[in-house]
Amino acid sequence: MHELSIAQNILDIVREKIPQGEEALVRAVRIKIGAMAGVVPDSLAFCFSAITHGTPLERTALEIINVPLTVHCKMCGAESSIEQTLFFCPSCGGFELDVLTGREMQVSEIELDDEEENRP
Image 1 (cartoon, rainbow, N blue to C red):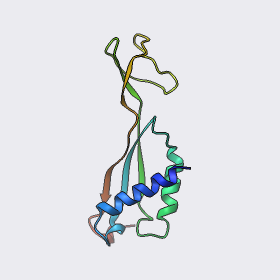
Image 2 (cartoon, rainbow, N blue to C red):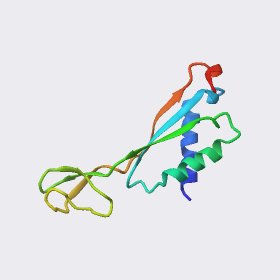
Image 3 (spheres, rainbow, N blue to C red):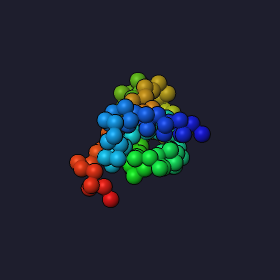
């Protein structure tokens, strides 16, 4: 289950970006996960919850933004969303495609509370 190591990397990024001692102020971490990233979102959310349990980050929500697989066809110039199993241009049937989106795996936002006492 590589989702556990991904969750740990997300936690490392948060700790790197947030001043020491202010982890309890982190309300949410938003990540972008592409359709071709090979990540099971539910497993990642579970792993993140497990490794933050009992820490100042245990109330932090992990918000996963799913990024569809989109391609550019070199033959007809169309940009389309496709399913991973159907790797051809829906417009012309061509197979010469450049992947535009769908490989992402990145922390896009870390949301903080203004004050610690505002935490539920």
